[in-house]
Amino acid sequence: MVGGQIRYSIPEEMKKGSVIGNVAQDLGLDLRRLRSGRARIVTGENIHYTELKTDKGILVVNERIDREQLCGDVTPCSFSFEVILENPMELHRVTVEVLDINDHAPVFPNKDKSISLEISESAVVGVKFPLWSAEDRDVGQNGLQDYVLSPNDNFILKQHANPDGSKYVEMVLQKPLDRERHPHLSLKLIAVDGGTPQRSGTVNIDVTVLDANDNEPVFNQSVYKASVMENTLKGTSIVTVNATDADSGSYGLITYSLSQSTGSAANIFIIDENTGTVSVSGQIDYERDRKYEVRVEAKDQGGLTGTSKIIVDVTDVNDNAPVINIMSFSSPLSEDARP
Ligand SMILES: [Ca+2]
Ligand SMILES: [Ca+2]
Ligand SMILES: [Ca+2]
Ligand SMILES: [Ca+2]
Image 1 (cartoon, helix red, strand yellow):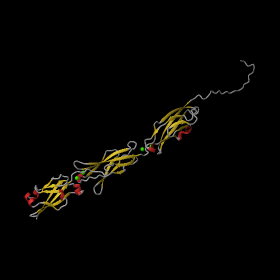
Image 2: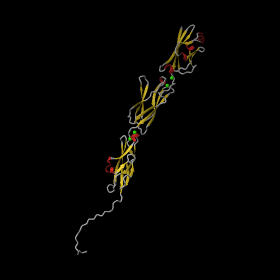
Image 3: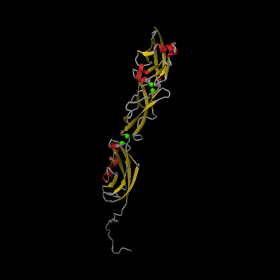
């Protein structure tokens, strides 16, 4: 019994019938010997992958060889079997190494879903958000190599290695979010392998920016001017102020009031807390006050306040008749006084 050993390297996924190697030539046997010795493949797992064509002395692919299925993460990937010939008996060991091709792209779990994050606009720089890991069934350079985050102003990507060498990624806040400018961000996390051509997998990252009360109410004018005639009836409106707040919900809900610092005018005017309409609520008398300065406040439900003022000019009305003040006194006059 004589024995030889040969080794072939082929890429995975070759077509059925593709030549793996010329066994006859590599073992130094002629075709007649193959036939007379009834050369055939024996013993060995995975022998269904190959077929020995004794008429040509070649070994061909008999069935699709998927490296990922055959070896998974194990490298190098190979299978062995023996070619036997009789009369006299010869046993030759053949090893076929299956080389990886880049036939898988990195894939994220839950392919149809996106990563949903809700982040407050008050989140501080440096806060981390774990993302998903991708998997690439290929090995070596054809396996997962890198992650990339789509360009954006707020986040950078940080990659970490697990003890087994695989990577996981986090998104780190590097510039504060602003819900009032960008309430929603759509980012992409891309995983790439190192094969040629390169393959990649993508998952969307939907960031919903939650509101914080970071805007105070702002009046649309720093000073409002109004004029009112004296003796105007109570309830007459004289001006409407307006403030806005960029926040949402209760953080943007405004109520108006007259400032405590307004003083005596606080009894003469009243403001509707919802509409901002200022009306007369007391006696206006030009002869007493010709001008009022009323301070107004707009307050949101989060406790922030904006202020403005209203200058009210009082118009005179002819409500006073002329008054003659007479002082009388007596003085004696003699009857013969000269003219
Ligand atoms: Ca592969
Ligand atoms: Ca790959
Ligand atoms: Ca806000
Ligand atoms: Ca606010």
